Length: 459
Ligand code: ADP
Image (tube, rainbow, N blue to C red; front, side):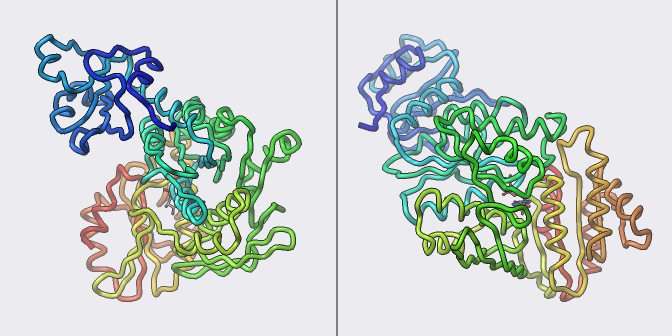
């Protein structure tokens, strides 16, 4: 039986049943009183601004069957008023959530693919999930709910699923360790080791170490890696004899490789080659980085014994999560590439290379600050500028504290580059409005906190 009862929760969390029914079956969980469905089990999570446990009455009034909360005194009157409901008091609701998710996971003997990496986690997760679902009923992380709250809640959504594809994110050492011990993946994927969050982690080697924590929760470590990434490649070379490592790549010799790559504006085709097997793949999103993401899905599909036709179909029908590289025609005929959701150095570089190959009259890059790069900030913004100068970009527009280094980097390599620093987004928008012509293409990209999507919305 794959069900969890209140008494199991009380036991595993060392909690106290304040009122209610210990045999109540807990099948759906919620952390948001506004989204509660009848019978849900509400877990009051403490956030930065609010303590979810404060809303226990609201949760019950909105239909929750039970609440799991911390740090509340329940009066005799309240007990009486909610006598037909269930209240479980625990020491720490976040830890309780982790325990329950870990237990739920233990009830399922299914393939669990966990994806991490500096960039491309969500995109890769979505492609892989689309492939896996061709054969198995699959539960996947929605959006990018990849942290210590989103991941356990995803697991709690397991019903009659035959596979799970989840994403794991981190800002610090130890975070992936926690997630993997809850999710117990049967197969791990690392998309790349770049520089996201390097401000917290100190070095790329530490980022590698943090991502490799994913192995800690695996009974039999089995991992798929991007073999063209320098650090992953080196790690592979030193560890391939004692860990089951599968590789994909375009340059370095890998188990599965992309050949005859044809990059088009809004899609790509390539041949996935593994030994004598050749599979024609179409990826419905442009850019070489998506060839990598698709390659990882080919490898995962094959490890999970999914037929190559189904792998092809899964990849070609995958849909990008919103706000990642949205391409839209503007009224005057120009094309807008809205990639304003987040920015790391690697993603910036990928987007600039993509823009450079875009067929257009002029290629305009509107770029802003990349956050969380710590002492590497100046260096990496300068490198973005150099990438602009080295690629076929006609106009660069920036705003932000750190973006002046993008401009500097571009001008250092090519002092004729058309690069301008603006006071704010409004000024950029005004300039774009008068500047853009039919057949121009505009890339808008910065860390989400820069809110560059506002520029896109107005255009
Ligand atoms: P994450 O979930 O790791 O933040 P996303 O899939 O949301 O990554 O993608 C973030 C950004 O990185 C997007 O701009 C996307 O176009 C770009 N991107 C996606 N995959 C890759 C990749 N393999 N390498 C570099 N950039 C990528």
